[in-house]
Picture 1 (cartoon, one colour):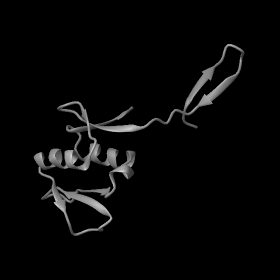
Picture 2: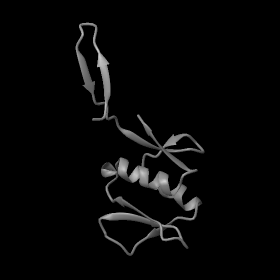
Picture 3: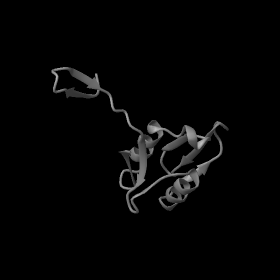
Picture 4: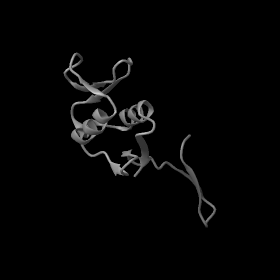
Length: 100
């Protein structure tokens, strides 16, 4: 059970689930990543390259000589917290995931 217990003055206790939206933040600038083009510019600065050998439904980036691969849905509207945490994990000093 995830959430916050709220104690009301009338004695009622509720568990409220505040699952807010997440944002991928570029730490150096403090800017929220709002498009794949801005994300790609940042990733390229750190050695990531576009990978074209995979599924056409995904936008993929590879960082040679590692085996790391970032797979993103081609539609930015479907870019979610799972992909954000994957990027933050693979680029720990570059990105951070925050609640909005």
